[in-house]
Amino acid sequence: MRTGYGTIKCHGTRRCIRNGAETGELWGIRVTVANTQRVEVKDMAANINDAMSLTDTDVLAAWRALEGEIVDALMLGRRVSLGNLGTLSLEVGTATRKGADEELRNTEIVAKGVTFRPSKQLAQQISGLAFEWDGVLKQPLADDALYEALNSYAAQYEYITVRNYATLCHCSMSTARRHMAEMLADGRIVKSGIAKGVYKRAFGC
Image (cartoon, rainbow, N blue to C red; front, side, top):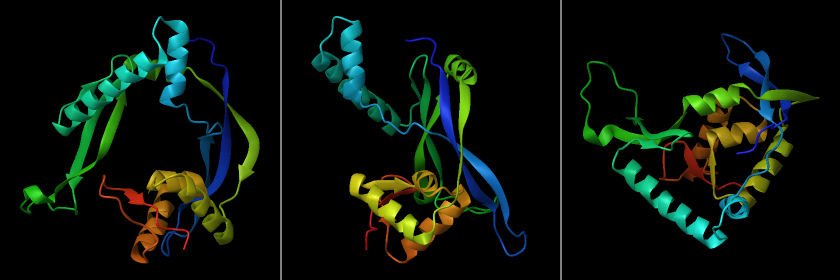
């Protein structure tokens, strides 16, 4: 593990954090990490290969085996400890909101995703990071730019989540949920069946 990570550059985006007929609009700033570069498993395997007497193939084979073990454990409802990284566990809930006096049926319980809880060690390391704003305050995308961004995203990825949408379109999570509900209603996106809140790309039309 390297040391001296330096300063992480961040973007600032003006967004509507409250919007309604009764409350009116309230604007704020959303901060996100500027570096969107994704590190692939093969890249990490190459780095491990440089540091240890293992080939890329050995590292990737071990990783695939570990992936399978993690998925199997989650599918059995178990919590998965990832050592100094943290813990993975299933997040479950009900398909619709239930009152305290209502009967709960098995079929109404659904998987909502996977929750990652960082270890105390990782949380302490992250808390010590230094950040720097790049000085640019972005504005929410206009409709034309919004559709262009969505089409560009759809060309690269099969699925999109509410958080992906919020990041892509420079809007709040509540606004992203509202927009995606509208797209779901008019057929531009469909539910993926993978987990709640994950949708298949259907825009570009």
